[in-house]
Length: 319
Image (tube, rainbow, N blue to C red; front, side, top):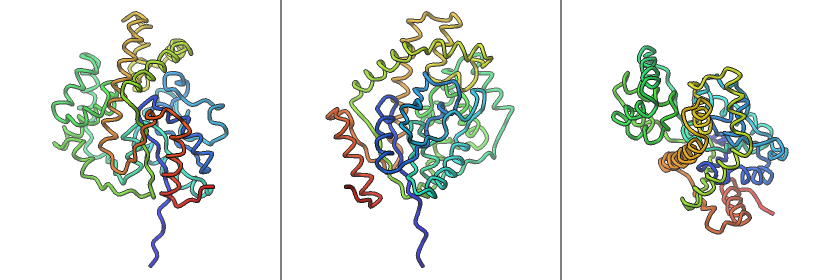
């Protein structure tokens, strides 16, 4: 009996500022791709500069999905991303196009690539509220340290400002007695897709230089005005979206908690740390073919290398 072939799925991951956007556009042109954003922050409308969101002109006509689909006060989740992505992959495939997930939010992307089951069982809302109150009183770092004592692997993977997921990891341990990282590791790691997974990397110092340049560009591009506008619209600093990189630091400046210079230094430091966490997460994923895009520094060379990997994986002829 012939089995039904798995749908093709191309995934391009890597740390922030490594160059995923430009590469993904060129690859989408080559392989008739449609791009699903694998970024937990780009779902929010009005949060463009701080998330380095792709502009309509940068898209060059390539369809993009899961960008600007919610207001900043919406509690977006990995489970919702998984459900929407799976639906989109089916729709894109039915059009004869190649589904492409591009981004850097490890849990979101991994949940789609493999057969993760998100369970809402074992919820304890009172405990959850206590943790949020604890973070409000003692700070996100203090709550993150609590997670580090019971689930160090999840603590390594999750940013302290990612309060919702830090609280969820604490809640899972509280209710089940088993760390979230152990539960994820025990899940079936078989992909429902014919998966081609490529990771972009480069020398750490080179990446950090690019991060600092990006932050400077964001500041020059109006990040302060963007954050100020969001606050004027009533989006509270405690929202998960407003705790994101680029927003939390500028909120602190606008509230008089630090100088602008201190805010920028913090933002650069936090973004470097975020990139390290992304790489730590990706190291635990299987099937990734890594491409060092900093080795030659030549975009065309790296593009041709990735193009050949995709064509070989999906048995496509290249002219």
